[in-house]
Image (cartoon, rainbow, N blue to C red; front, side, top):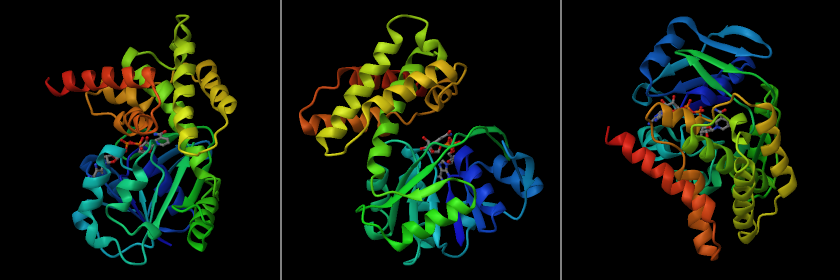
Length: 308
Ligand code: NAD
């Protein structure tokens, strides 16, 4: 398969590198020239549980330099950059191109549909972790899964075929018509841990340093899943609460990406997470006070940061 990754940061490079290792033709598109040049000069350094190695044969460039129309376009920018990124490669999205999002948050499917026919869109969720260790260098330890589906949830050849390609790259992927359950559970997890850590500056483990931390995280999970239920999506509340408790107990030094973005003075994905949950809660007439307060606090932090 001819695969283009749009947004080749931590996750895009991890997926691109593993897909290239499994024999696919992969192009990485990004706007981070230092990262792209490092990959062109030395290959992509992948540090995973399978070893520390360099992956060659990747095309790494800006969208303006891209050629051809891929079979699969995998969007891995942060959610707030999707529209701009997709505009930059509009002429490279062919009628045969499948466009897949595995980004966190809600609203990603709608963003893709502003640029691509809905029947070409594949949605999904992944629990694989990845961090940028430096230009051209990705670190990812632990295991994850990928769940994907056509937008309408009807089993289709395309999502089965894409799932097989990701599975063959070791990404533990399967097509799953219930993918919205996984997407919402991950949104609840991120709304709880990412926004709490980003606002407080706590690592995930530090959330149990005061008696208020864990109940706050639990309250946010319950709020988010109540909105999912109002949208007709069935979720497993206990599983979600357990994964939050597990992260607090075992990923103690982890700084969620939203905290990393705050510390670096960058805009965060809060709009796609707490922001989308609040918008949908309002439509459903549900109050989500903790989610809303954290959204407001993070918007203040972003505004202060933008003002210098
Ligand atoms: P990242 O910041 O490392 O990578 C995003 C990349 O997009 C950057 O390299 C950036 O330069 C690039 N980009 C921005 N604007 C662009 C444009 N106009 N054109 C092309 N490229 C552009 O982020 P990430 O951690 O890889 O996360 C990507 C998505 O995956 C997010 O939605 C995130 O929530 C989700 N996710 C991340 C993880 C993780 O462990 N990192 C796990 C699961 C899901």
